Length: 97
Image (tube, rainbow, N blue to C red; front, side, top):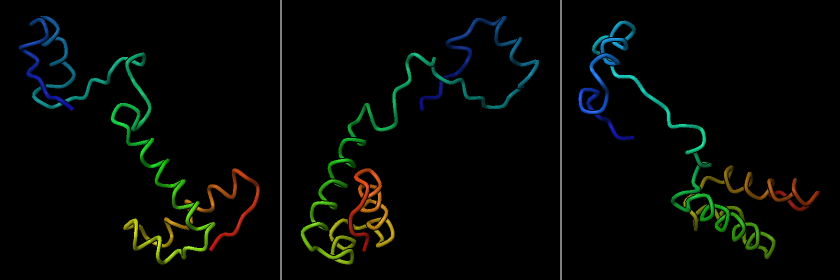
């Protein structure tokens, strides 16, 4: 998030109007709805996590233990199990630990 001084981007009349409600405090002005994108979409994080999770599920299906996956990916055992269970829910079955 980038902070800007209102005096540099807003007309004085608008600043005076805002000061009636918020005087000297910081406020957040959200982006327009049409400019928003899903979490992780812009920087590729969502895709990286999806690929990592798919790899975890593949390795688990090929007899790599939850403990080993936890160590390999620096995740808690609970998180690894959640990733595995998420795939089981989508496919309607599968082993869970």
